[in-house]
Length: 157
Image 1 (cartoon, rainbow, N blue to C red):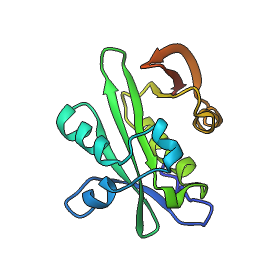
Image 2: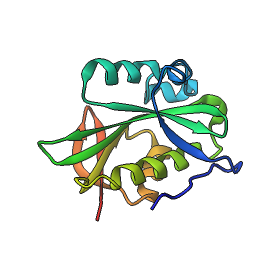
Image 3: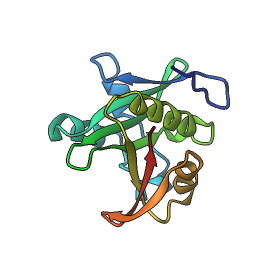
Image 4: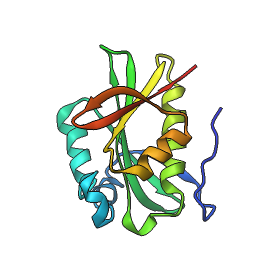
C-alpha cells in the first residue's frame, strides 16, 4: 500500500528516479553550512557515487513542484540488508518536515521489496537531530560503527 507523505506545508513529498530532466536540480541540492560536517556539500557527490560505484541508487526528493533533496539506497547481499545513505535536504527546506517525509517514503519503498528484511543506516554521533529522526521511525543501534558513524537497523516484516 502506498502512503502519501507530506511536509509541514502540506506538499506531497515523493521520491523520483534520476533522469535527464532532474539530475541537475538534484546535483545542486546543498545542506546548511552546519550540516556539511555530516553530509556532502552538494548532492552531486552522491550522484557520482551512484553512477561510478555501481552500489548505490540515487533518488531525487520532490516536494510539490520543487526538487528539495536527495537520498540513496543500496542492497548488501552479503548481509542481506538494505541501506539508506546520502540523505540531503536543501538548506532552504530545512525544518519543514521534508526529511521526515523522505524517510517515510524511502522506508516504504524499500519495505515493499520482496527481499527486504532489514534496513540499515548510519549517522555521525554529533548529529543528534538525525539520530532522533531515525529513532522515531523505529531504528535501533546495532552496536556497530561504519566510518565512525553509529549504525542503526530497522527490522522489516
